[in-house]
Length: 216
Image (cartoon, rainbow, N blue to C red):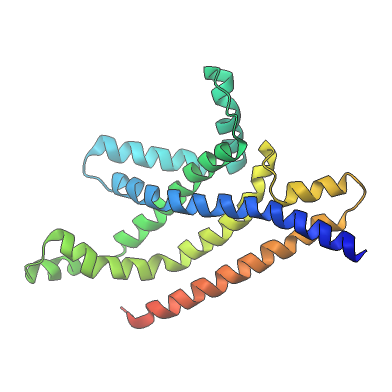
């Protein structure tokens, strides 16, 4: 029994490695992309603003599950060029989805800063870029940290959706044991997500305390 538990744990850990890979790469790509989309949605150039906000509306208004199917199947059905790398398809769908959510968090944080903050910087003869980097950005980071941390913790659990296009993440690995009559590995996967979510919660709690130097 101990040998079986150890063997199953090792296989589940290998599957969870796929979840962590998808999680990490999604963050690395979607957070800066979300910032670009945010600037687009706030642009004074109306066509760009309209394009960015339409993108966000479509992505936030449709399920991530559907987006996974679209990214994986549509290239093959429409263009005759099927996605051969399932992890890559999952990554593209996740980056598209989460960049839209991050962009709205960024936009909300930036727009929450009063005009007086910009005016104060200009009175001090600071350039617009200096005002943003030295005055606005520190306040924005502090204000968006709670919603960003919540979105990142949600991402850690959403990675399990990648199994619908046969990415061998932890729940898909557990389902293989279920087919053999072992149900407990499926519930055991919850431990992996709980521990990782707990780690992220502690990490972001620490970061938020560090950001309490500014209480404006």
